[in-house]
Image 1: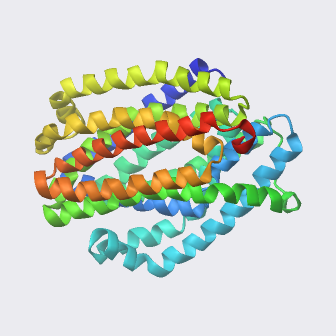
Image 2 (image 1 turned 90 degrees about the vertical axis):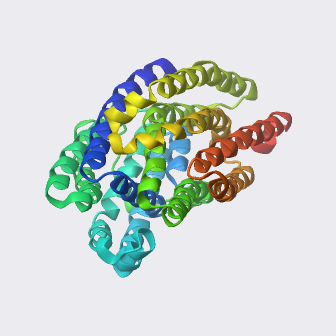
Length: 421
């Protein structure tokens, strides 16, 4: 699928996601304030970590191998059947752990046992959420972007409905549990798509579980765990530091500006995962790889720079529209956060090459160094400059990460094709 066509589908999906995120954030900001934004951020980071573990982080591997085996129906069947068995078993294990330690999770994340029931309730939906995540990877790998768009829009619309309804009656707890009900609706849509659209003729069978395929997918577990663990965990640590050093309200300001970054970078991130990962996975020749990455820099990076500049100029308007007057102090946090976003996209265009070609050592090294650097620099800058120091750390970390990715990929171009492809 061409980049332009993919971008059109993603634009529709991202627009709906942005609107839904805008509404949800506005509801939380007005009804609960900065503290609510902080709690939502904490909870979503935990769910990201648990969700990543519940799939054993094999989704990138699923995308890669479905793209590689695009003309081999039997191999595609093996990949999907094997991945589904792995995800169901792993998510069942995570669900059991959540039921055992739900009170401790509440204490560790929120410093109170008041949210223990939220984690307990989440335990019933872990498997559903994990299967939905796997299905997104399947659609992506098979380049079924239309189906992927339908699922993303369904998630956004259902998320709005459940959040508005539950927030009205249950406050912040209602906001936190809304994702669970959304997952059930998304699963129903997935089942409908599988039944009505025979785009790959898949039928799950235990006999199709393949140990060789499983081992190939497990190779992505280490990379996926690092990728899915480092950022949420880093944000949890930094946010906890802001809460203990300042207050939950101050931490909510930082969470607010990162939320804005998440919204406008959602389109870019989706293009990278939906288009670039499968595309880079199927390309064999390095000359073609260079051309594909160069295309990304020519099309994506200027767009990110323009959007970031526009957001900086209109930041006061955005704060009033997206949040409430209580969030006005965060206007000073925009400059280095947006510059860091630019560096982030520039580095990810190269980092996806490591992921697509399963370059495990370099990927793990880069992710580990990123997490350590972000946390260390946050502690240093925050204690020296205040809450704005967290944005200094974000910008500096992605700045050096971009430089590191340049040298890593430079090494890749110099090596013989047979050593890495």
